[in-house]
Length: 212
Image (cartoon, rainbow, N blue to C red; front, top):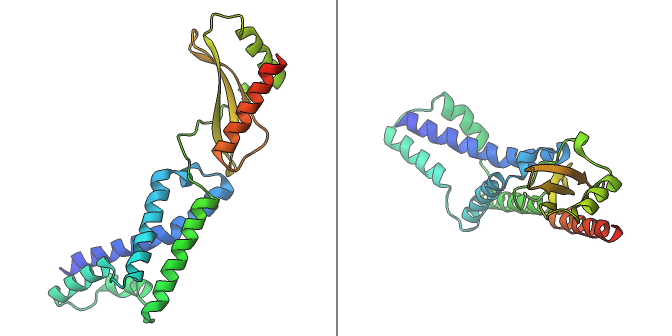
């Protein structure tokens, strides 16, 4: 029983590291352009974890992991071991319950704000093509103009990609007959949301068609 209680304690500590370290990782990822910190699964699990902790505190319900650990140790009737002594000191503090409630709710609010300031990817973002395949606007427009007289198997698409914490549009010309990408043009400007980047890309593509 004591080993099982230690396992619950380690799991509890891992959850705390995930919640606290996850928030730090998100902001570092935004600064260093780590794509994984915008993953919806990771962000959703992170928000849900602190959300449950804050909700339990507001309802005055004890943490299930703490209750389970206490139950296991009581049944075991064992003295403190190494894991319980040192990990427990990092997790548990003798403070009024309201202090923890305020801290949990404030941290949950910070995570929710981070969701808005550093939003997760709304959909599967395309990976921007390498720099050597980016065409200049005039060359790309020339290919689009040539496609008007083709058999209709050349199509231009506007996609979005993440870059440096923001989003850019990527206009791609696909040759369906050859099954390859003929040209790709990426925006110099970054946008705060994928929707804004897509709107700007659609406007750029429309402008190219009018110029042609």
